[in-house]
Length: 115
Length: 108
Image (cartoon, rainbow over the protein chains, first blue to last red):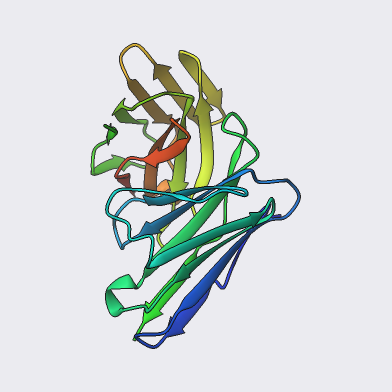
């Protein structure tokens, strides 16, 4: 079964609203979580690296005020897309690990459609 | 900077062998992953190499040369269901960075 659960799997929201996506590690403590977005026929682009209890490290070109990442506990990280626009429509996927030398597990991904 | 290169697409015949190459230049190296991804789904773990050499797992093998910044994924006895995107990812500097993926089409 899944060891990283991502919710919701699909969400449609109106332009201008905010959407929250949750990533949970089910049976291990995830000290590090990664958030990616993927456009059709493209690879996973790392948005940010999130370590429990500290601020996320964002990749160049990713707006931290628009993509708010919170990793408040060892089992939960959230990505909030603030004031979403149609161009934010994408597949968002998280991954989690206990440590950088441990196995990295992926969530099932979340399809966001902004209308 | 970080740079991971792999071919964009490849085509192979059912029952054949195909090798997908990946070259990388990253700041820090803790290991290299290969994932399989079908459209609209999350990546599925295939292999992990941290030391030089060949790792074999059934029909799939992965090779790593750290000095050359090079890896390949070898798929044997290709099946139609192997048609998918294959992603090379390098772990280093506290990050997991993906290449652009190789779209493999298996033809009858």
